[in-house]
Image 1 (cartoon, helix red, strand yellow):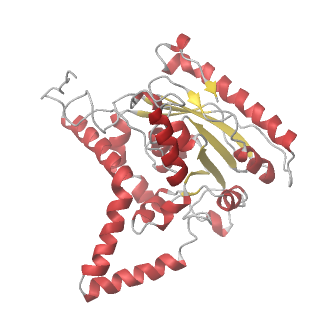
Image 2 (cartoon, one colour):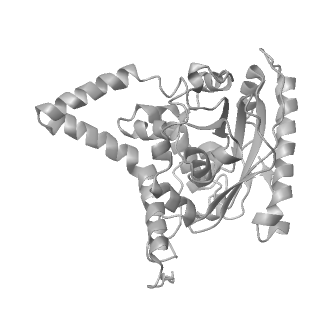
Image 3 (cartoon, helix red, strand yellow):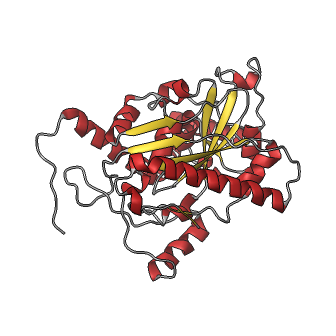
Length: 352
């Protein structure tokens, strides 16, 4: 492979942006393992004072074990969400958030975001940080990105997730979020917001296996649980499309049925994590590496789809609103792809 080297006269701010992107990849890929071993090392090898602190923290973890299920810590920490590091990360691509309609802050929303990509870089930046203007575009609405529940049991790392405002993707967690009261003076709204926008990346790890430039092949046709949850809570569904997410990495060919794909799907079934073999760029060259490529990311928030509140939604109800959501997502993609995909005539959305 011919290596394309980065020029030597790159401005300092772009070096910092690349460093931020690389650090984020290391954090997401290895952060949990590092913090877990760090905590265990302190517990076993630390002096009596450090060991005592580790035991106290373990007791805190036990009593706080439900944080990921009961709504987390509101919008998280404004200080953490505004770290300069995240501004460098946002500017690396750069990431942009586009509003198509208002989201009134007198109700809750379930935002279904696509595509997953390898690590949902756009979703992280828009909903876990305050760098792209969510609060200004949707005043009074807190964004709550959900993830797998086991992440909230990892010492130290869980505190970072909670400081971003993240919560578990479990049914109990979603039900708690989507039924939060909308009264200004309610204790749960002490962060100043009166509405909750719960963000779920529906395609998940399975969709990550489809990551390659312009391959908008979604995993959605059989995923209807989010529609059922929205019906049970009477929550509006909001389609969300991130353009450019699939351009950040490439993968070796892994068509369904291939040996590589079978191995990836086996590991996913066992661990819940898809072992994608990704190809990005490096710190000083553009040809290969673990850093995402510097491509624009644009997340478009569509119009909410009102749903009735049905305590026991029937299959036909779920299918009806699932079809309505798929049509709205397709319309959102087709309307905006002309602005954010260069070869948009040859790029289609596939719902599989």
